[in-house]
Figure 1 (tube, rainbow, N blue to C red):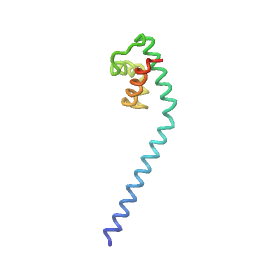
Figure 2: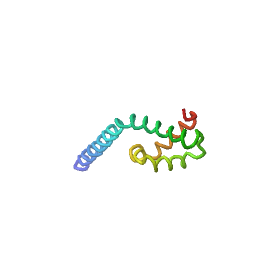
Figure 3: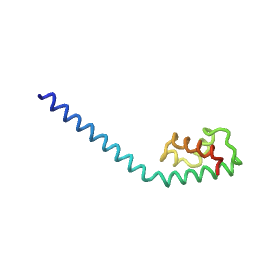
Length: 94
């Protein structure tokens, strides 16, 4: 019977960790819509002004972009920036 009680207590601790993790993600999500909009605008402006609207390599573009605007990579993460850049590239940078 003692082993069963220990399993219940361990299970509750694991559930608590999941709740705390979800709360952190929700707090971060609140900031993202305005960060995403700013990122898209800044990236499109860079492509129009420095690349004449033609991007041959998304990774090279993001390296250049992150040197100029390092904050987006810190806030949104490289994978997210790459996914958004690919979307914008497929839409024609408009």
